[in-house]
Image (cartoon, rainbow, N blue to C red; front, side, top):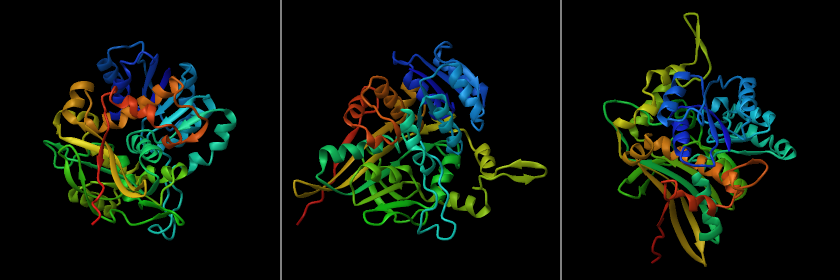
Length: 406
């Protein structure tokens, strides 16, 4: 398989590192606006032929198409902030390549009632074009990171094997990661984090469909496995809620994330000051987006691995019935930062995000996943994916959470 990797930040590097030992990977083109970053990653990988570097401006669709044609790639992997999704998605269509991303096209809040009604939803742009992709016989696999991605695979597995009836599919994400030497240092793209955390969270309910609520609503304490323990999680806008109900039968779908009071306070302050704005403003004759300034002022998550310690857990909590009896399970994956740094040279959060994309490439390459149109991970059989997780160094676990009925 020949891949054009658009974006060589933390997750992009992890994708390349995890894919490197796989013989079916013929070539991955490392393409980024920061050419020095590409060369840094290429040097770590130690294989110039399989990992050539190219400058790319992801806002320019014609440049993406040009590189796809130059290298005759089979797949375009989108590993940049989702503000560029439309251009990369459309470039893959025009180039006749499979498209994959880990976050779907951006949402726009409802103009008059943002905390009750959806406006433009995550992925609407892509799903609106699904028929065109079908007619062309092309596949766009959207939302194939860890969350969304692996978590959606878990949801499909729960429906296929663990439940007869599902009441709620709830993605729950928590960690005990610490970063030494910084008062505030996000372990993932701050641009994306601001987007998903300050937008109105989406919930799906049977008979009601998709609707929104206020950011950080419905706090609950969730106990995460493997020593992480109890973490408060809150509603956050995320793709799984927009994906799972399209293919799976449930009465409710939610996403909750353990952010912590300090992080929530920081996000609220950024919003209050207008520093979450992604539209450019004039600053002494220079056009700049406030959110880009915030991102530039913070440390690059790709270079924080040596200062990080702890574990991060991503997973899917499922509540329903099996054989007429109530059942609750949590399907999860825990990544330890020390192990990820030792094995991949990448910190845990980006490595955990990246591995699902590589497994998906593997399954597509070997015909275990097939499809056309715009599809989410739920549209494919979950067993081949989950069978490969341990081999890729990211084994899954399952925790029974069924409460005793008096």
